Length: 308
Length: 258
Image 1 (cartoon, rainbow over the protein chains, first blue to last red):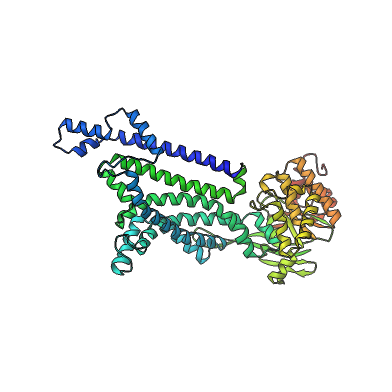
Image 2: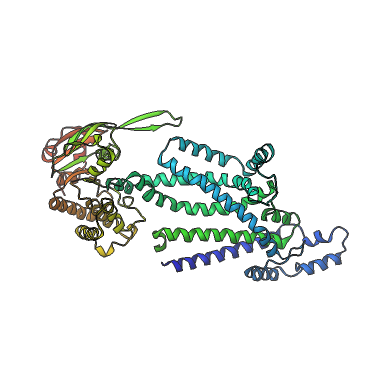
């Protein structure tokens, strides 16, 4: 199969995923109790007031009509207006998204910089000091919740030793602590995958054959083994990045950052249906796009996948 | 090729980090004359592969010495050792993991040649000849390993070993993973190559029948030790060790069926 067809197939899958998630979100929100019209109208409203608000929101129409209308708009990236602020949902999301994205990207960079080198060293020299460092770090990373790490880092590096700002997102420095809290847990998982993948490649017979051919250790480890070991890591990293976008919601709360997380959290408190719907679908689209990119990258570097 | 008192202890660590050793190869001495096929039989886990890797100094023995062409490999510095090692090559049991999945056949074969500084024209010619010799059309040389069958991959692995112009080949169960009909083809190819290129083989197998067909001398390995060693015919006629007798009895129709 050539690359173009592969990409087309994956794109189709992406569209189906987004359609499925949009559908689930639409119905789940309408199944759970709580009428936004009541919430907007307040306690003193008369039944006719409430009916008027319902008509304005469109929630008085049949569910199927609402559903197809919703899908049609999603296809145009139009998620309607917020019920509370009455601003377009897409604009609200796009306004907050850069901060969350920056946080996730920085978290990913920090995670990768920690995980990949230590993972490789651990596999190349098992039971060495590096391996123990990696072991301890990945245990810690998996055991410590990221919000706890965030609070701890704030206490140490913003309160006791004030080198980073306590809150806000004016400078890049204010992103360092949240990105580290986010990246550390992800690094733990990435590190274990890197170590396992690398040590599996190193045990394969082509490595021995390369030694027998007279290649140096360095060439064998970094030219043969590492290239093959990094293949599965691409997929893991793609998924990890998606998780980071979701995990950023909690971290933004800890560090009082005005990103997507806070936007969605308030939307949920206030039963702002269009904003919740738009937010979930938006995250789903971004998650799918990241995985799509990882898949394409994987197939470009792995000749085996494309032919299957 | 001589091995003297090879001992290989696998070191491991338990759950609490305590060290313990396992004698995978225990005081093995063998001598292989130039141009011969030396058979090494034994059940899985008896230390055959460990011995093979120790001989190549890929996984150096814990003690004992390996002499190749009169030179002790343990005394060589890494660059010299690499030079000597090129004269010895190894063919593996599993041709799937023996080829780098991301390298084309051409790249796999040329890598060793580039490393010793062979220019492109001579490299291309040599790769074409070798692929032709092992029965793989050189028009396929730009393909990746997963595009070939198991038998074809084993032929590619053999061609790759031959790029280094070796004198001594270790065949570590080279046909155990293959269908019977393909086994015969590969064995015939190996026998032809030996004759044409004047090679010396250490043939490792758990199949005494196959070993008796191919080899001049057979050593039987059991629990890390060589328990019996004799010219093939003598061993088949008068097996001394109980394990050898059990191996012989396990062959349906007796040895020499091949």
